[in-house]
Image (cartoon, rainbow, N blue to C red; front, side, top):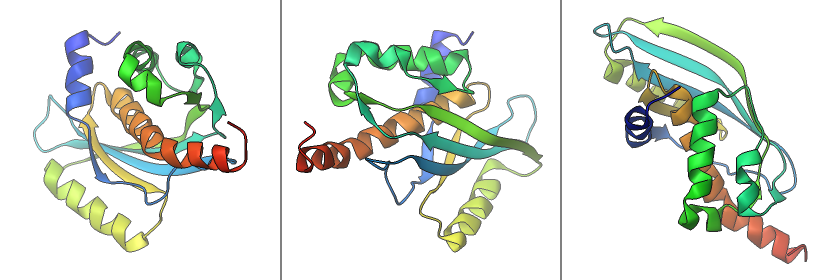
Length: 174
């Protein structure tokens, strides 16, 4: 289980280098490709690059008190703790009045023997040249990488919420 100070450290040290150009679809599922880069704490100039996909199912309107029941397939205990903490923050819960089924899939990881800044610059250049609107590049904390990934996802949900709600209103669903 992740300690509270590690949890907060992970949240404070999650940085999105490349934000996806698209947001979460209102009436369909959405899949984002991520690369999460983190320094190993016990080795100098060695970083771990994790890659995979985050799949967000079609948003559904749910009450904030049900946020904890958010399905987090493939996520570990630290990610569930983060979801629980978000539910308890009333200011955030007011924004998150709908839920997603989140899954992380196609997970790969590699160790790279270069400084973090060099690896991030190389990945950023490659990702920008691909110009895939669903790509994201994140730096975070190695031991709590799932918290970093879930923080990115929650920020993306907040970024998508306005458009999703507007679309529901246009269609007379709320």
